[in-house]
Length: 386
Ligand SMILES: NC(=O)c1ccc[n+]([C@@H]2O[C@H](COP(=O)([O-])OP(=O)(O)OC[C@H]3O[C@@H](n4cnc5c(N)ncnc54)[C@H](O)[C@@H]3O)[C@@H](O)[C@H]2O)c1
Ligand SMILES: [Fe+2]
Image (cartoon, rainbow, N blue to C red; front, side, top):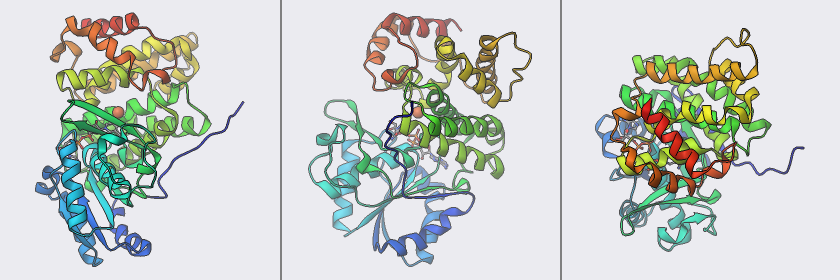
């Protein structure tokens, strides 16, 4: 039976080539006067910041640029950003980038509206007031942080990544303009694209899935499997970049409303222990965990195979059709250059420790099948043997 659901979605969503040009009009309509522009140095150097400031300049909108956000943003980045927000008399935030600037901006927005220290907000729903308005402009096609209610900040004192799940942090306007994504290097395109595919596949089979999240996840799988190779091979292929923007966006709307599974739980540990890029860690583990989860819902895995372009009509039964989804993911990973686990700095002696941490990860509860620490150790080791 369909149960009560609360669905979170940014109020305004702009997507498609050139759509960033529309933000000037939206800002004027919302009556906001000065933005803190939160981004990182690379995006400033390669000219992506200018693509957006040209739009602001043409609309006469004031802004102060804070481009100090580091990959995996820290409490210091947040405090520095907040200081600039206050000093410059800002009343809204424009975030430009992948997950790092998006998450730093959410943290600044929550502190601007609620006061206190960002460590006070670790956990679920800790703030009282809605964040200062955020216009979240995504430049990768991956984390989908521009549409989620989550943000992750590294506490430099405790040396941990704090996860905040807070609907008050959601952006007011989410922007996905593929023209801002053409300068993304091939390796980054592959990694972030496989992250988006993992969001879609995990969302499609997660315990919390429901008809709307299913529709979004399946469509995301189609977009991503159709266009990722082209986007990696030719960064200027705007049709492929557009489909990747759509894929990551609809995957984000799906998983942020239904949850993920143990690909993310186990990949998070590879990221924090060996600094593996998040999308690469996901892509490496994805087929092994799909194999583990396959019998929980062979019908859905067979549908994933079809969405990825596999011909399931000749499969002897549903389980055989479901297995084609694994083949499709392996082929895609190979085509975009994802390495094997044994080619990374993963140390098999760490498997038990990583499994222990992954069992406590926030995503584990969403896995479609019950999982034990021993199961996770076995998955790490199977992936390592290749
Ligand atoms: N909020 C969430 O829901 C969520 C989900 C997953 C991960 N995260 C967090 O997001 C962060 C990682 O985000 P990420 O993987 O998107 O990477 P990122 O934002 O750290 O960016 C990685 C690199 O790519 C560059 N880059 C981004 N877009 C580019 C473009 N268009 N052209 C050229 N270079 C570009 C950046 O400048 C940066 O150097 C981590 O802190 C992680 O914990 C958040
Ligand atoms: Fe992810």
